[in-house]
Amino acid sequence: MDMTLDDVTARWNLLEHSFYQRWTQGALTRDELCDYVKQYAHVVRAVPEWLEQVRGGDTAEVARHAAEERSHIEMWETFGNALGLSSDAIRSAPANAATANLLQRGDELGAQGQAAAVVWALEAQTPAVARAKLAGLSAFYGIGENGGGQYFAVHQHLDVEHSAELRALCSDGSQNAAALMSEALWNLLSSVEAAPQPV
Image (cartoon, one colour):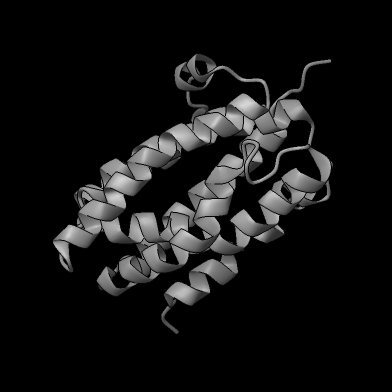
């Protein structure tokens, strides 16, 4: 049986990853959150570039989506700032192996005409994930919607629309591309969780 896009999100259900489960339970250390901020910042910066490679559909709508995501880079850094990271520390942090693999995979798939599936895989689960993460941040880490959590507050609503737009642009082969990106994102979370923590 052929895999569908819904099968992809079911297979790589991010809310079932132990990193996000620990996040929503308040069990992550601040160092783990900071490492996550630095690694995922690479993805936040890459998304607008991948969106610029999307073909088909409403060109103006895709361009608006890319512009919105570019404006959210600063929101992501504000989240890091709330954890005590400087913007320079976020921007200068090198990608670990799992993050570098995700970026390479996204670039390669985008070049193969699968940019819509690349970003869809990153955004399809975002509304539910962002809502859960914001609740965890507010309950356990003192970071609310207006105190560093704005990125999640915005994305829990905005990506409902964004992911629907991108799904409509997915083509044959998109399921495989989305699965590869979803797996890469899962592995990024695993890499942060497995990183040595300061004593």
